[in-house]
Image (cartoon, rainbow, N blue to C red; front, side):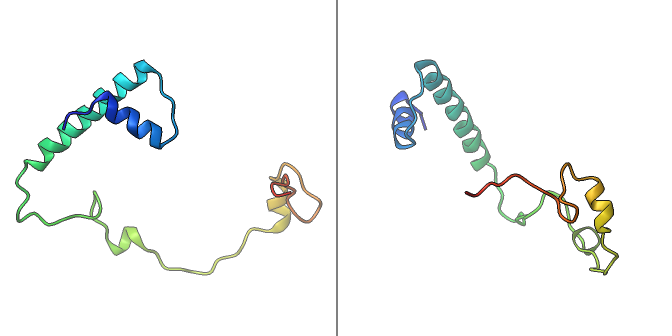
Length: 97
């Protein structure tokens, strides 16, 4: 599919973007290159090939581990690494007014 400036401008308008002229030309070329590559991939015969959900095989060894209870980090040790504390808690900036 040929991507024109008009296509890029239409999508930019929908996204409320105001790209400059050089960006439009560059983007149209990049999108055309991507679509050409996807078209090549669509020409490959994949009948009989099982779909994969991961690039590498997952097993129960690398995907899951036993959930074992362990000792938690001591509060005093945790507070030693905090940039600011009130003696019992880590003090962080207020983000909700």
